[in-house]
Image 1 (tube, rainbow, N blue to C red):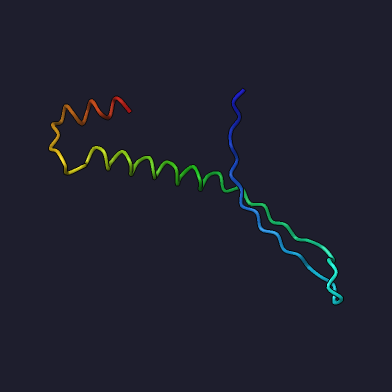
Image 2: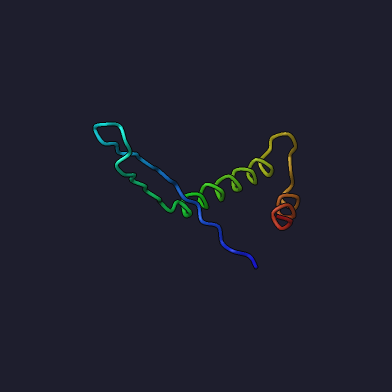
Length: 71
């Protein structure tokens, strides 16, 4: 069974009493899944454009079209 991943950011802070003993913790968990998915999509897009737009070799329209269909 495939499950969706959730990306989170975690920040924890320890509060202490005047004698230095731990009094309590504060934890903040933030769902950053949308941001992470956007970062991944942007990286994939940049990688694709790097491959297609590489100045190393001139490509014909057909070569670019075929490469787009392959990916």
